[in-house]
Length: 561
Image (cartoon, rainbow, N blue to C red; front, side):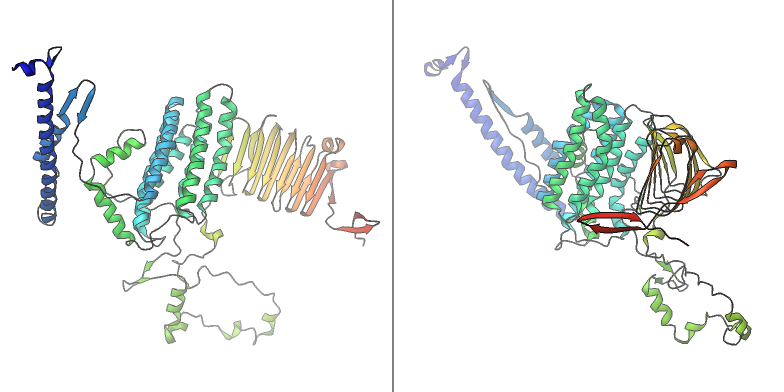
């Protein structure tokens, strides 16, 4: 070592030697970077040529060597460290709306999942499914950004949305399987929130998100009421799910004001789906791991080779059902079937019934004396059983009957018909419980004990027998209903209902039971008399009003005779 170099020794280290080593390492790293770029170009060209012939492995031994060398190559001088990382092959740039949605998941959904795991494992599992549904929706929105809007009855659309629907169904099933859980209100909140993912199928998604938020708030308010002064984690949980709705509403308002923003100049839906699936398979390593980590959970299992089923009929309903005729060609329902019948020519009358002269009314005066019989409504417009009438009433499936006690304070009785029960539905009530009866027909319900209040909504031919109530009965939009009071009911309110009969007890009459009616017709109140008989009293329906001296005076119109 020369005398000049020896004078730069500091604590046993020679600065000149260190600088020479640093310069040599920098030069080597520059060579690695240049070589890496050339290798990537050659690899891309080779893959493009062999795409239609033989399979070329994605891994490259030279590149792997470069990656390991570059990751291991670092030069330290004091606290300064320089690292070189080989930039991977450039991926397709995502649209701004997709990046914003992924950022929304990272900022709001992921912290919500973490808080849910702190509260309870089952709540955490439900929140994880909730986050996974957002991830599935991200994939769908990526397809939307590249595709023209498809037909809403396209089976492929159902296959694309099937993973999202599966997550929503599992959230609901998790709630149903844990009804005895002390965190049932949390699970109900997430179950109600699951409907928010269908904003992609409505024309006014901003207001739709607000409506779903209100539905979920009914249950989240119960969580807030229970833990407001007890546990801050649960309070944060309620605030976080509210923030998710608010942030989603802002996102939808900016990027999808009128529903999912399909690309009018994009590819056909089939091509967009195929391209997305191929790109997903090509990035099965890093992409799948990154997307799964977004939801703060373990990697999802590989998808099954069998295509998933279409979405529920309540989301995208088919307007008609195709069928095959005898020649093997498909025939459509609706007006197409009608014109097909008319185009038969002389064969169009082949299916008509020949009427005998004895059945002709113009030749038999006795037949004209009989009352006319209303014609039966045809099942189909064209006569084919494959055509479904385009009415909401016939298309809507019957909902499952429901009888349950929620939180020990509210009985729910819904969707019962005569075919669902053999006899009256009997419920033992307590003074802290209320009862809701809705969408039932042709049944009888008996409430034993003293309850708080009873609400009867949108029923038909339903009879209700009540022992006693603390508050009263409210009847809304019901037809041909019957109400019998055994003990004491202080108040009865009836709104937008008709053809009702109320049987009051002596105790209710003695305690001045009040009956309020509005928009109600054909209501009779029956009061007890001697010999266990009842006297029928009609509630007035017609009111006459006059104006005298600037004052409106109303009185009941009495009909005599």
